[in-house]
Length: 185
Image: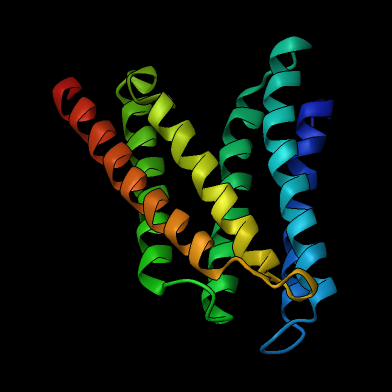
């Protein structure tokens, strides 16, 4: 590797955190409350590194083609792992997970195709994509925490409502990107 920059190290950290995150929830059918909280904390840390690596890459002028490739891969791997685990724990809908994961694959392929045509910037991340990601992250965090029995707080309904809102935003943003690409092709 030519140069291991701080932003690139943060991206690699996000990838390394995936098995740590997954192992916390794979104890049994119903992970102990501490495992839910630690998994949610790892997911929050990964989400923060997602924002921080991009910020630092621009601020420190440490952008690279490899970093631009690896960053969205790390994001998609973490989200896919979280969604698969949440479905396996019966905390969210398999349909919601499939919609979100399928969109991520489709848009990644679309961006690759547009890059080959020299038009990658036309399908760059838009505001709707950022809103979708924010809603999706909050939904995942709530579904990871799941409950605080001492306070009689249960996050299943709110987490899943946000998950379905994220699905709507996911489809909306996908159709937006596809329509832009269709006009550009």
